[in-house]
Amino acid sequence: MKLTGLSFDDIPPLHVPLRFHITAPVFGLLAALFLLWEGPEAWMSRWTTGSLGATHLLTLGFMAMVMIGSLFQLVPVLTGRSIPATKWVAPWVHLGLTCGVIALTVALVRVDPGMFITAIALLGAAFAAFVPALVWRLARIRGGGDSIFAIRLAAASLLVTIGMGVFLAVGRAWPELEIPFRSWTDTHVLWALFGWVPLLVMGVSYQVMPMFHVAPAFDSRLARGIPLTVFLSLVLLAHARSDHLVTPFVTCLCAALLAYAATALRVLENRRRKRADPMISFWRIALASLTLATVTLWLSMATPVRITLLPESGAPLLTGALMIFGFACSMMIGMLQKIVPFLIFLHLQRQALGKPAAMMQIPATNELISDRAALWQLRLHLCACVGILVALAWPTIGRLAALLLALDFGWLLRSLILAAGEYRRRASAIEAEPDPMASGT
Amino acid sequence: MLASNQKRLDPMTTLLEFMTAAHRKCDEMFASAEEDVSEKSWTLASQKFAEFNAAIARHLAQEENVLFPAFEEATGMTQGPTAMMRMEHEQMRSLLAQLAEAAGTQDASRFLGLSETLMVLIQQHNMKEEQMLYPMCDQALAETDAIIAKIEAFSGDPV
Image 1 (spheres, chains in turn purple, brown):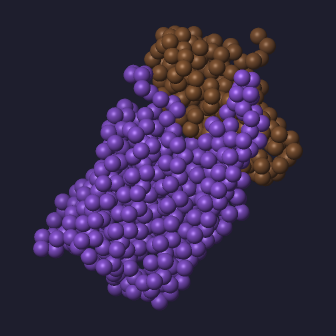
Image 2 (tube, rainbow over the protein chains, first blue to last red; image 1 turned 180 degrees about the vertical axis):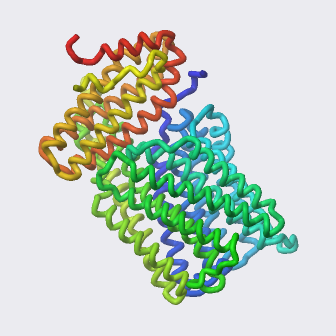
Image 3 (cartoon, helix red, strand yellow; image 1 turned 120 degrees about the vertical axis):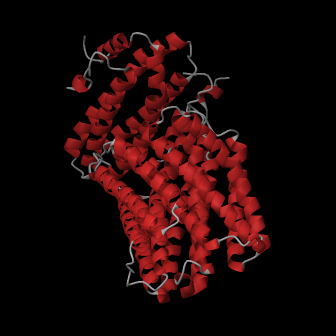
């Protein structure tokens, strides 16, 4: 084993993950305000400007923002080596992603070919600065366990998603190319929502559920078999030319996703750490949403059944909303409230090392985001989930659902900003404490 | 008894397996104490926290006094991973002292905030040890059985 170059202390400066984590709920809020402005029409079909814009504000602006910020933090811990030049690269990735998501939303809403080119350039640059370094690190981890196994498949799905997304944007920028939008969009959505998102959540859950909830480890055969089945089903689906091939592949994909939801729930219920923790509820909402999304996907792709409660074009929207908001966003909103206070604690503690008097300035995590605030987050999030489901059946209440969504993300933004403010106060208080080592000289 | 919480698994046990088992044992003791605080059963909680505190103090001391010096001697790396791990041990000790204080004053909210922090700190520290340092130790140290015996002997209990 090569020992040199392994660093145990490569955590990036706090501003690296925090700028992504605090920007993320701003985009969630923007998605909500956008839906508020668009009104009921946005909830009618996946092809409306309202739903296309809101989808990308949530998936790229919120979800990708959280994922990238967390990966900058996690990769050094997982691999012992940081992403090269993190301190300089991260702010540019952040800027590219922020401007790129805005450009893409404007392009989708105004159907503006020039703006699509801007979006491709900005998002392309942001991902190009980050993804190759990530893939390089992931490829070089030896062994790595079930988590890395799933995260590698997730990264491969991300590459397909980004690739298809760029092609679609190119098709919009140069309409004369006449690319087959419908089928390419389906492939893009399938790899994004049923590849990248669940595979990454699987990889993360194998690690965090046993760790943070003192739960039993996932059975290794399932922990690898499930993501592999998901990935292979997606590959086969992408090549399935006839309907009678689609049915078995979709069934395989759905069976694997349901198996994951069931396994994860069982692991969670067998946890040894039984203290009250809103994160458990966020996990339950996420896994229930995954189950529902999988069932609706199966019904709409593998059977002729129509979900009668919904308008004609509502089924794909329901599946998408459940995967994006119910599954991915639930898990992320829960995790952000754990990660951000911990990172603040970690940096303050390092700053206070060697200053015994300063140790008293270091807050516990629930002084950064209070238990009450976390409980309200859960309540607001549940309301937003219910609001969205109802609005899909009755688009007339679309604005009310958008308002609930705004409250959910607005509350998260408030919590994170307050925590960051508390960090600033404590950091300057620690700075002001005398250093006993320095005073002797 | 505290001393019984680390059992020899079998003659071919690696350091990774042996030390990881100690981590899991500490995790469970911690979770159990935390649950009692969360239910405000203070008598039980204080006793369980004291047991956990003793078990983790012993584990940290075993690493710092037996395993790390052996690794440092074998590899010549004194400012590498072990220095980092020692620093993180200090961070844990500081939190453990504050937790003991919160348990003493029966301040559940403070205890649970600190324990959440300590849990995350311990887990990311364990990950570094289990995924990097212990495998490095297994590779760098020839006589793992002898080291394990020494670790067990360094119990803090009267010999």
